[in-house]
Length: 232
Ligand SMILES: C[S@@+](CC[C@H](N)C(=O)[O-])C[C@H]1O[C@@H](n2cnc3c(N)ncnc32)[C@H](O)[C@@H]1O
Image (cartoon, rainbow, N blue to C red; front, side):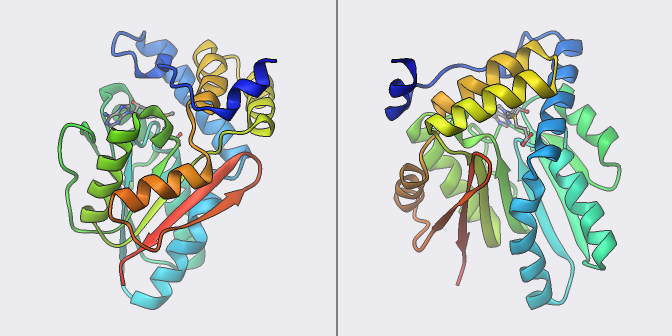
């Protein structure tokens, strides 16, 4: 049966990663993904670790979001920070100029730049480096180098929020992508992402290989995990 194939990771190229994607279709997909992130509480997965660090440091916390897409995650982080009196600076990078233009418009308080996070080293000078829904795009080797690069760039915290591969995730993501957006790209990429995703224990093994000793992982409803590493 098809669902039993989820036992093994099957990496499927996503339409949004195609450099030839039509910009209008790309913007629709980014908007659909932002809606799914909002309804599935994507930023809520990251916020508790960031606010805890802000209380400890008692100064502005600088966050870099890699492969930021439409910048919706940094935008919501910034809104939460303003509402709760946390001093936060956000930046985001993405390989796609369409994504960066969208992110700059969605989050005028952030700084966004085009950057290939696999080819080029990440800029440093950040307290926290986050990555949402991107790890599963990568080969295991690239995932290890990205995690090692995030570790180098993060003064204190690395947070990876991604889909967990499971039958439950596949069914949930398929339904969400068909109910919450009309974007054909998201309807293809969402379920493909679950097939490409790591399980939480596979993600910890990659992090350990990348030198992130003491990494912890927590399952997050509905279909995600949060991988956290803190510099001691
Ligand atoms: C599924 S989207 C996730 C966007 C966002 N983080 C979110 O949670 O909605 C994956 C993003 O990775 C970006 N991307 C793909 N390859 C990349 C690379 N080598 N360097 C930086 N960004 C990349 C894509 O352009 C896309 O915006």
